[in-house]
Amino acid sequence: MDSFFIFAAKYLYLAVLGLLGLYVLMQPRDSQKRMAIFAVPAGLLALALGMLAGRFYFDPRPFVVGHFMPLVPHAPDNGFPSDHELLVSAAAMIGTVWNRRLGIALWALALVVAVARVYVGVHHLVDVAGSFVISSAAVLAAYAAFRHWHNEIR
Image 1 (cartoon, helix red, strand yellow):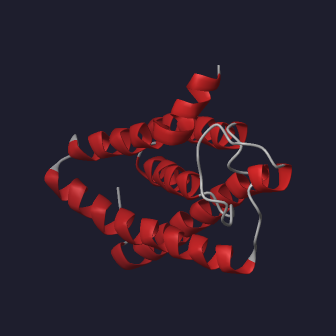
Image 2 (image 1 turned 90 degrees about the horizontal axis):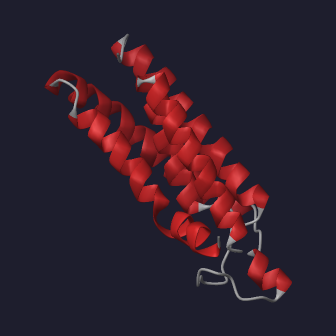
């Protein structure tokens, strides 16, 4: 069981990005362009808000406070927010904006990544939950701005 969680914690984010990328590539060229114009600023906003949040809230990693070796080697730095979860949550929310069924699949994978990051001992629940909230808020804000400026993204 540890092997599954180690794999999920380290590499499952690639599947989320791959599925979203494949979905984009399957769309007509004009839709791809609109998706990129929306997704890139949304992702950058999520990253910026995550970095800002990490400056205001410090959460030592579980292996630091619990004095154990995590299943995945990691630096003993601030665990908040989880970068992996920030990335997959932003991708899942972006996918949800474009296609609800795709979004459900991506959110399911994002949940597995969150559980795995906690299981292997590199994040607390607050780290991954914070990433869910930050990335979702960033993507929704970008969506509102994009709709305002472009009237329609679908």
